[in-house]
Image 1 (cartoon, rainbow, N blue to C red):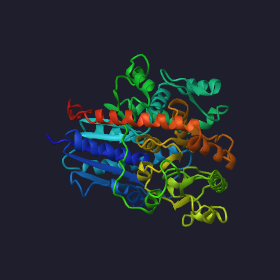
Image 2: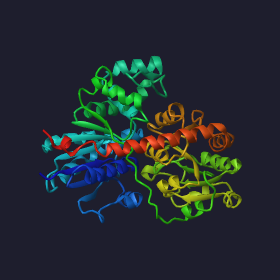
Image 3: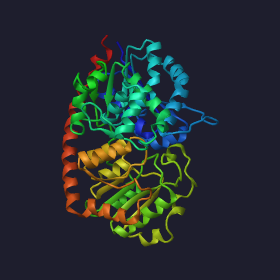
Image 4: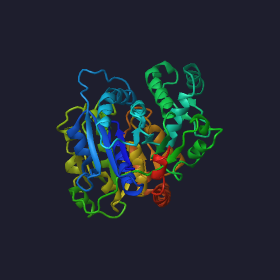
Length: 462
């Protein structure tokens, strides 16, 4: 029997990359004969340019990537990033159904990421043998999602109002903002609870994490008196880290510049493919980097005043010239110690370079994993979604990051200087570097073990 897997990713590189890497792994290590990946997007050219050399079609004809183009003009995509992406995936359901129905041979395995769980009904409708969810972020976030779904709205609001946090069995509590008014969460909580209920209709859940990163949470999923009870018998498998490997021979001007810098001397600054700072914050960051005196590579994107995820949807201000928002004379004053890149840079290769000694990151889960597998300590600067959870994990639990205080609005240049020095030049930073190097070793060992699980037999058995 030919094993054909159909994989679906919701919009955004944080979802596309793990799905693509899982598809490659299924084909190369788990006996799959063919894998077709569907990437949902509202901008196919931009998605293709961001994915770049993760594409494998020319290397392997049995690995096929297709794009599902959404027309979001005139659509109400207001609210949080979660509600926007959930609505986009809801709009894509008819196209996903048609696309999967047209595949030959018919897929025997269907995988969708956490924001596309409504598509599990398509797999059931088409009588696909096995249907799965890939969680592209932490096991902790999966725990939050499924546990919230197990509570009724009144109980959930009571938890948030009384504690300002949700106590999850076997896990670290999750603190929420705006706890004085839980009703402000209604739409987002409704989507989260729906997703949590749909997750437990899958045959299995894969999480882009590993035991060395989240041992307590993973044990809770294995405990039938804790999160195992909430999952209703659906198995949870840590299969990470699913990250794109750096290309050793890639040519780029930033990499050429890094070749000339001392080991561990450069701070890399990037807020992901979707993150956007305000104009004022962009100025403060520029002054902070300059005053710190450390070498840096900074990926600058146009600012956005009211949406920190604006770059994901191309809604930031002045798309053509992000450098116009830097302080006057900044580029000239820092030309000997820094490189400023517009919009995009080869992140995996930069983090893999021996000159890179720190990473100012929004703490998207892909970026967290990429930093760990390359042994680079972080400066955690969360912007939206579950990034605050990720920032807490890397700073407070794993001890591989210093966290900036984003609770007071603008992070001032003085704090930026202080936190950069903590990571790059102080004893605390040395400890972070030792911790992340140990995690690098452990995750590499687990990645090798994960190549033997899940087995193809698991996907195809009745």
